[in-house]
Length: 143
Image (cartoon, rainbow, N blue to C red; front, side, top):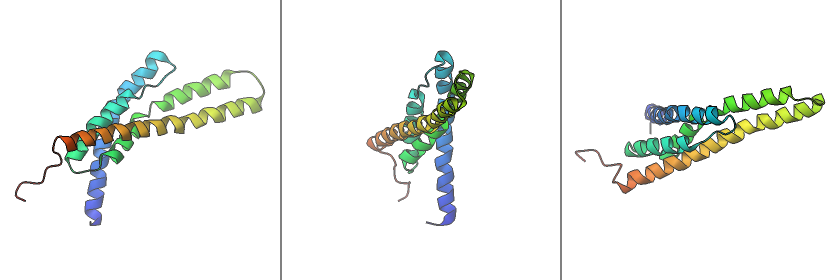
């Protein structure tokens, strides 16, 4: 595989991942905006399922596409963690205790985004499986 075709395939994976992530972001944002407490990742799963299906139809591996879509779809976690940091800073108590609380809040971001990546990978894997069950990817005409 040449460098050019590798870069083209990587670019195509990100194209599908961005599509899935951008589809999921409004719904994950809305889930947090409505509750102010929870960030639902169901939209990440369904968007990743869709792009996993589409990616597999193009002959791409669906799982990495879904993981990337989960990464993009989890961006609203920044808002949630920012809100938590503001709450912690507003609490009273010794400075060292607030610093520990902020460190715990900071650890939440990679955990939430990591969960979004896993949810996206699982959704895309299922989408890829569905594409394979329906006969995709099909060989190109003339072969």
